[in-house]
Length: 120
Image 1 (cartoon, rainbow, N blue to C red):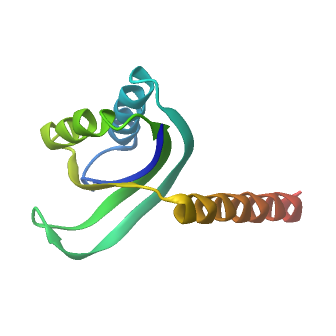
Image 2: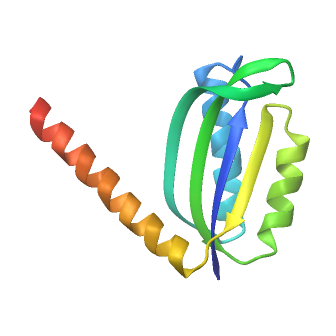
C-alpha cells in the first residue's frame, strides 16, 4: 500500500450540489478500490494562475489516501472523462512527505479546535 495525495480543480460554474456529487463520485471510486481515505479538504474557490478552459477560477479539493498503485490509472481515466474536472494532480508520498502531511494535519486540527474554543 502506498500513500497518495490528489488535488483536483472543478469548474467554477458548478452548484454546491454538483460539486458535492463530483467529490462523492471520486471518493466512492477510491473506496470501491479499497483505498483508505485519510484526509479530505475543500480549499474553496481560488483564482487560477493562468486561464484553463476560458475560466479564471476553480473549486479546489484535496484528498489524501492509502491504496495500491493500480488504482491511480482508473482514477485518472475518470478525471479525464468528467467534464466538471478542469485539472488534477496525483502524487505518491515518500516517507518525508508522509511525516509532513501528519504534522500538517495535526496543526490544522489544533487550529480548528482553537477556533471552536474561541467561538464557544
